Length: 257
Length: 321
Ligand SMILES: Nc1ncnc2c1ncn2[C@@H]1O[C@H](COP(=O)(O)OP(=O)(O)OP(=O)(O)O)[C@@H](O)[C@H]1O
Ligand SMILES: [Mg+2]
Image 1 (tube, rainbow over the protein chains, first blue to last red):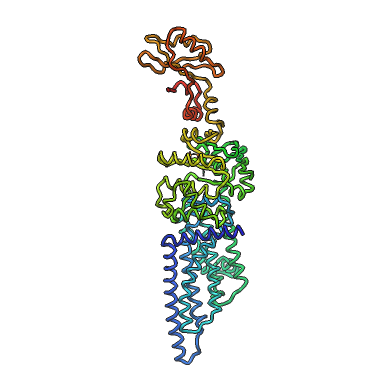
Image 2: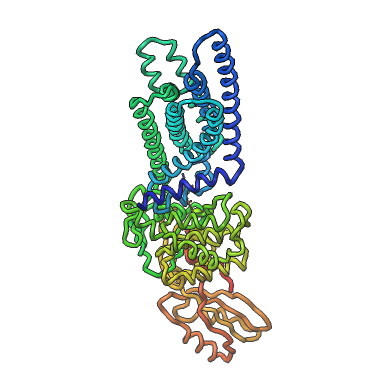
């Protein structure tokens, strides 16, 4: 009970700090804009294709599989770019300004602090995703998409973002400088994304390993509307492992002084 | 209330704190005195559970800060060297957050925040952002933050640093007011502060404890030799010879001179009280004895003496009333 309270206190503080400066609004706005652009591109493409096919007597196309799925997969890439902005300051800034001394001398455990920061960042991320649901609303007004694949897609986005956040927290805990943290996080995310292509062009064994490392790859099934336990376990264990390493990093910092 | 046992802290190859031990009783104010880099902050960080010692053990309110950190931290308020403020929070929001993480129940939080602001005189800044506070106010909000959960133990790292003279006096009064129901450890390198605020002093230098005593005890203990100040009205006569000739006197120096009235510093071994002999000698020669009093070394001189490792004789000989 107490621990939940502590986690909430930190999460609340983190979430509010995003909106105390313009950064929170900028992130949400930027994400909504880029998402909107992909949404527009794929929607016009989809409309052209379906009307064209109808003219040729072809069957109706599926808006879930032929449009929403691609929009979500592309938004995964946007998230990769936006997420470092969310996580870079979490630890680095506390270390630079000395507020870490307040947190570490308060009756909180490291895990409570880390979870608080994680859920705070998840809160902002959830707000980002929530705004994009407005676009989906448009589809429901003018069309008749299936909600299940959309729900599974958003669940996938949430989990994938959780992986990025836990990795971002880890990197932020390694430095005092939030810019260094941001750039480093971005570089690592980019590598995890690029690794995808390497996987596609290499032999079967490397491919298995590489695919396992690629966070974005595991999202494909969610976007298709499939919730596979394999991917769920992957994402949840990735998040846990990232947070675990963050705890180790915070603790080792304490020993070094 | 606080017990530090043989604490050593090494950063790589530098030893910041070397085998430090001391105790602080309930309700006591202990001053931690030392020059820059002495290891004051490091010791305090260990006491507050911010980092573990390389060796040794510390207990706060009966809880080992390393094996029972949560219990110990619940009972400790800490003002770090730089007040740990969040720039984008207002003072009230900030104190409310601190109260939350210190485990103050939500229904008491409002009152505790208000009373902490009143005690530290920051109530008029309640809705100001922390980033827009002056150094003095930052320090006071830091102090408010430390007392917010009414902890048994307060660890204050240079609580008066950066304050103006009026604020310094107010802060010292506040600290004295907190003693009694709080046990306080404060660090400083301002010496009069220790004499005015603390009941006991730990002098630390290059990571080692040099002395632990009351300010009064330190003064007399470190003095080594007792020095008397004697003012004699004997126009045209130098009393140095006479005083020097008295039994037990080790050294006499003329310290001031005005209209035939001369002041002398008379040094003797600490155990012997030679005031009567001096009085008798002066009066029997028909001179006027205007003043005869023991000279106390100020803490400042003790501090300098201790930390620069001077011999007591050197320090005393440089001293003028
Ligand atoms: N994080 C650190 N890494 C390495 N050395 C450190 C670290 N922190 C402190 N030191 C060293 O440990 C010694 C004690 O430092 P400490 O900050 O405890 O001194 P202090 O008494 O608080 O000094 P001041 O009066 O300047 O605040 C110094 O020699 C300092 O250089
Ligand atoms: Mg210090």
